[in-house]
Length: 100
Figure 1: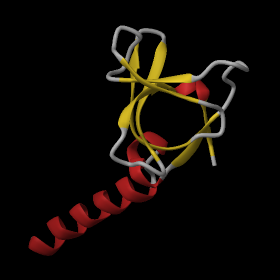
Figure 2 (figure 1 turned 180 degrees about the vertical axis):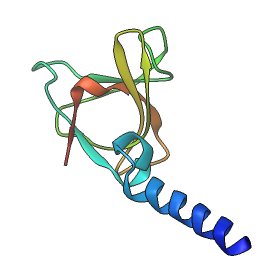
Figure 3 (figure 1 turned 135 degrees about the vertical axis):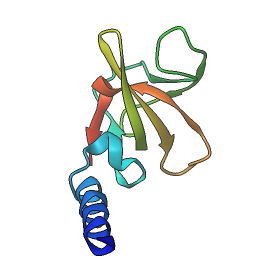
């Protein structure tokens, strides 16, 4: 009985690891900011929505790590950290991210 339970747990863990989408895999997924209008920047916010404080503007080409995503209204928001400054975390719109 124990072996059967262990096999079921192991199968579930492996399925979660290998079948996870970008938002679930998180720390492994590198994306870049793209599609922001010239002269503008993607806003890194304190939470998933336009009502949250803006921490910093990110120009096109900024490399980010996606940790998780959530849908708020009609926008998908992702919690990210900067690839070169991982302690700087915030939320950005998924619409301006491109997988590397």
